[in-house]
Length: 373
Image 1 (tube, rainbow, N blue to C red):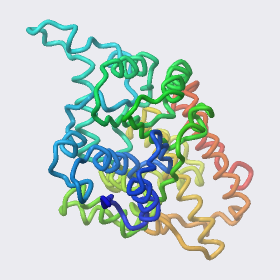
Image 2: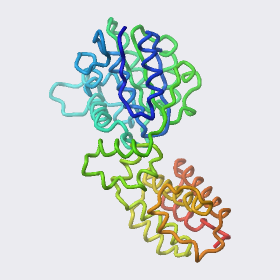
Image 3: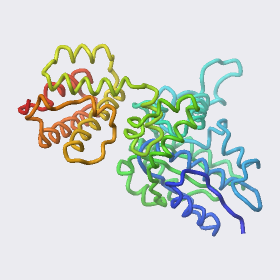
Image 4: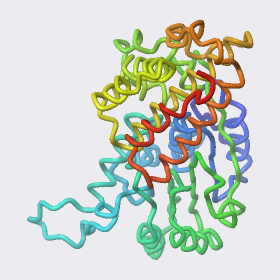
């Protein structure tokens, strides 16, 4: 019997054992949906599964050296990946449609760039543009590629499958209803509820767990290099909540986002709005994704203040220690919970993209602790 060994963090071993058992007993489903929080290694596991399915070693899979394993780790195999792309990229000509002398980027060129980034850091939470989606054109291109029949095993990884638009979801449903022979689909998502229910129901569901704090730290250092070890402090690990991808993202900004969040809260408590608005202007937060990350830190900070008052463990201790509520006796747990709700509502409004983020942040600063200061 062929043995299978899927690599990964200890916190996700139970899920890998389930997969290895299915591989060993030759009952692996043709469609699998891996869901879980952003940046915890869903794409990394998908690549491991692809290697195992494509490997031809007679004893141990994935072996890492056969043609199949190399194909699974080849960024140039662009037909084996589907992921969100902005319109200009998704609609670019294919390599077969441009002249040999053309310098224009093809859709394969764009896909190659994204796949290389995934291989460099499969935990990354910032590879794809916030406005990118999986269009029906990308799904139809995938479906057309199945017309070239052959006997080899094919594995297609569909990253961030929840970002299929409606037309793409319906088109992919037809493929799932009749999966080609020797073909496997591995879908990953952080928001399975956004996917078409009929698509979800045709896939084996696998929920991937967040990593432990120590695993987050070690994986982030492994990706970033040993020189980054000092930047992965307790606040970074606490904010990551089991996601090396988030730890890596926040480590790149150093202490800037933590300082901005603590100053935002302090100045709002003091009603120092002019100074706060200048601070936000200097920070140049114009994009939704940047505003949301600031709001996430602010949300953690307020939640930590609640934890501090109730005696619970604090997630971002260094930043929380900078906030004193002694001069604000009216700010109790009730006020903090209301402020937390206000921040969460602002995050939802930011994602809706109906109001400029600068105005949203200014409105939040004035609204925070309204009636309690």
